Length: 161
Image 1 (cartoon, rainbow, N blue to C red):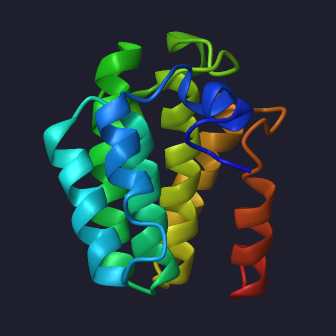
Image 2 (cartoon, rainbow, N blue to C red; image 1 turned 180 degrees about the horizontal axis):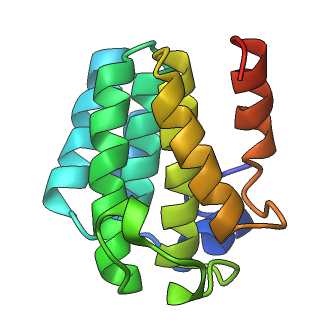
């Protein structure tokens, strides 16, 4: 599965990744973690409207246990996607009718990134924040297209509701 160039990319991000970004990302194969971090940050900074590098960067930091960095990148990704989807940049102000979250593109990426922030919040022990994010996801995505039920299950395992 290639979340940057395959069907998953189109479903989540709604479009193609610029060749310059692909070259940066593909150039990290087999590289050190530092090389990967530099390439991903370069992609984000040089193509700030391109959503896939944000995903890869927050996922990279989360997988390394760098949850503060992951949260920072995901928060930036949320703002970029909100602008592109023409929704409020404050996640708490977004309402179910503001856009169609089922269509591939920035709005769906925004919803997916909100789920990522909930996951990061659970891992950071920020239970109250995670509960608010999950409640918002439940309102915006009542049929759970992005799979927030996994984060909800993780939260329930981490302590009492």
